[in-house]
Image (cartoon, rainbow, N blue to C red):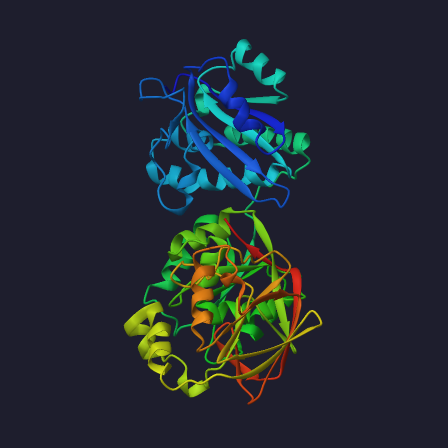
Length: 470
């Protein structure tokens, strides 16, 4: 098909679901369409892609084949199958080139789309048929087309780039977005924790992916607690566009503390035993797709962060475990995320309830228990959530107490299963300002790091931390 032009089409709509609804109402399927994608960007600028590749003779149901028609892309960036995969892959004979370019192109279009808008993006072998075009316009679409001529349809050279740039500018003008013709972060600093849970060739992966996208990158390697915070702040102040932490939740805790107040977003690279924070935000669980994310996604999520004294935590604070009782590196290596459960079961015969005094948004509460939690992020390293009612960006912190009273464990279990019962509300509170004191001073842990003893005061900063997300 190198003797034919390739047409790139965009039908841009105001409204998040407008493109999806329009696709369902088209009068008939255009057999010349090679592939298509529906893209949506909400008010918070989160972007979602739905591959709706349209190909005759491939078992289409209602004109839509879910799953794509190109079959060139795999892995975390595999959502990029479809329209721009058609541009960057369908006409490119070399599979490797298609794998590398298509996700980047989809990300650029996502950056150009304005908030609360959507688009149908398609690649075809001819211009949009008048019947289809008229139907789309009647449904509120603004339509843009670019032509990639025959002499360049087999490769991505300057002419193809020019056609692509035209489409991005048109999309940005229609939706109020800003056309992004480059990677989201040109300079990235990675803080690496070498004792984190996974044994993998970290530097090889970083170099391979960053080189592919032309990223200017540097690393710092931690030796002790506090190094990651210091390195992250130094990188932010040195002008890096993003600071990423490779490690577990403790490493991400330190990165967050380092970038707070600098205006520089943080990235999450999975390297720990559990990686609960990354799971909460939908970051790929495998290193290479997570690095690829930093090179392709313009999406950012502003999440709540909790201030404790002079520092912050992003996941949770808890009391009641002395430093010499904490889970060891050897246990984590042996049991993985279940090491924490093994520790708690081992301690159950020894622990006793003590009196706690809580103050939540001015309300004073006296309760017996052995462990108090203040939760911002509910997802654990296993991928399971303490409660689906807890949200990382709702402006509140969730507080609950564990007690030897059976009602406490039953309440926690019912919250885990999202049961809206009276019992699920026992030993549980919500607030923005929390104070914790105990009859006997208790150790305080934030994001798995020992940070002091009770009494302790916590205050949420709604949407105070910016994180790179899919």
